[in-house]
Amino acid sequence: MSDPRDPIADLRRIAFLLERAQEATYRVQAFRKAAAALAKLDTDELVQRAFGGTLTELAGVGDVTARCVVESLDGEEPVYLRRLEAIEAEPLGEAAARIRSALRGTCHIPSTRADGGIAVTVTRVSSRSGSSAVTGKETRWPIPTFVHAGAKTSGT
Image 1 (cartoon, helix red, strand yellow):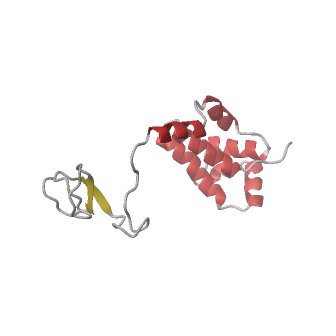
Image 2 (cartoon, helix red, strand yellow):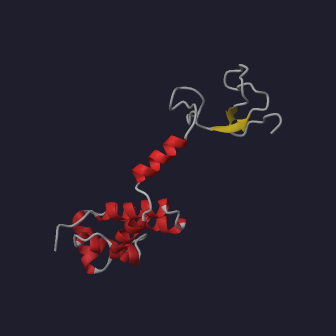
Image 3 (tube, one colour):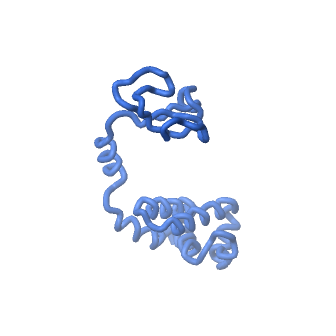
């Protein structure tokens, strides 16, 4: 038996790869819920439950996630994780670089968290007038404007 792996990290990696592959949301949530449930346990209890076959007694831990935990604690990469990594089409770094190269303009939304501007509780509304509701100044192009959620706007 080799050194144990981190079963919670393995479950989170599985959830990430499932989400990235656009698998059903319930599968992604199953692995995230199991990771969250197991994170509440101390290491000794986790190991005892894994090898005692009682992980599935915990809310959020099913047969598949429990099997992944046992494999991780045995020092093996879980079969489920190996399978997902084998079918992963494009490494994340390359995929991210491809997306970044296609971006044009800004992806910034003004907010009080980011720069003290508009509150985070704003809703995007397309401006038909070509002026900014934020600054009130005319713009060259119609730009998205922001209003507080629930506010009434003309023409929407």
